[in-house]
Image (cartoon, rainbow, N blue to C red; front, side, top):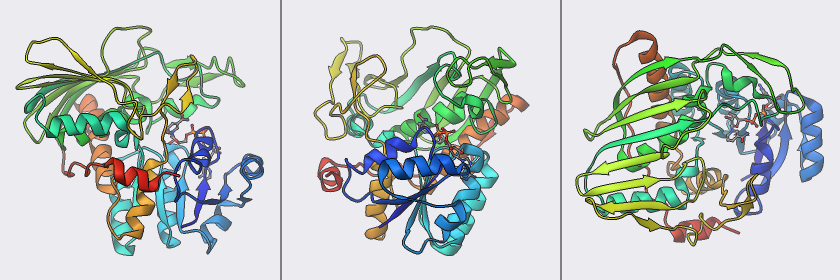
Length: 374
Ligand SMILES: NC(=O)c1ccc[n+]([C@@H]2O[C@H](COP(=O)([O-])OP(=O)(O)OC[C@H]3O[C@@H](n4cnc5c(N)ncnc54)[C@H](O)[C@@H]3O)[C@@H](O)[C@H]2O)c1
């Protein structure tokens, strides 16, 4: 299957490079609202540069890879469907639940497959933790916490405006990794309750090339609350870009037989810690699993595992074999409803009940991953 990229910004290199990792990702063309950006990537990766309309009409393309900003996701996904092309989109699926429902309706009508990031839950840590939970290592999960705390995104991204607009903020931009991981581990969510705040109404960009420019904040930068899961468990969350420093864990799950600490689900690997009842923590390293082997150096020089593209590769395999992908529309739509519910609850001071449910995605075993790797 041939893939065409729409949106050639910051994350596009990761997807172009995923062709070197997975054997069924074949990008043949790219486009962007800004022609010079698309031309540059096309030259760098030896693909065609087209306008968005040309790319959507290109008969050689089977799948659109949507790497535009969140506010453009719905438009590009729907245009892909209208042009008879499957679409894998970066997260979030859309900036509100209603848009997500429209995507679902039209994709069902046209029998087109839609997949959506994040795919990090398919990494070594997500899959190992899922196996441990399914094997009852900590018993039934009853409680938990997740924490995302930093001081925002204006210090690294070259165009950080979208992080502070509806469809982003700490829940839509980063919470989506945590929520997807938790749904993978613990099933779907029944209701949410949240409160929110915005410590600074304006942000000053400190990254290049727009250093010194002002961003007006249009979505809350702190959201705190509780997720009630359909299995009866409750998970407390704290998502903020108003915190300079802290010592909280990313995710902690408390079961009837023990506890589990998980690393940042924005990454594919990292140690899991498990304690049986009140015994000492046992560290579980996942660096030998196929999607845990370090393959990249981070800004600090540490080796990390980054296998973004597995969700797309697995979707290509799903379409070929006439089944739904693990990074499914159902999963993305449920996660979108939860994220919108968190914002709505914080605005109304009410518990928001979910109308969607999703199954835990099937485990992605090492044999399947091996068959997708180069
Ligand atoms: N940057 C990251 O590290 C990262 C990581 C994971 C996910 N993501 C997600 O990937 C998406 C893109 O992020 P990014 O960091 O690459 O953003 P970016 O701003 O660097 O790039 C987005 C590109 O999309 C183009 N674009 C916007 N609207 C368009 C439209 N209607 N048609 C065609 N092109 C359009 C813009 O011109 C821009 O070049 C976002 O949804 C983000 O949440 C980014």
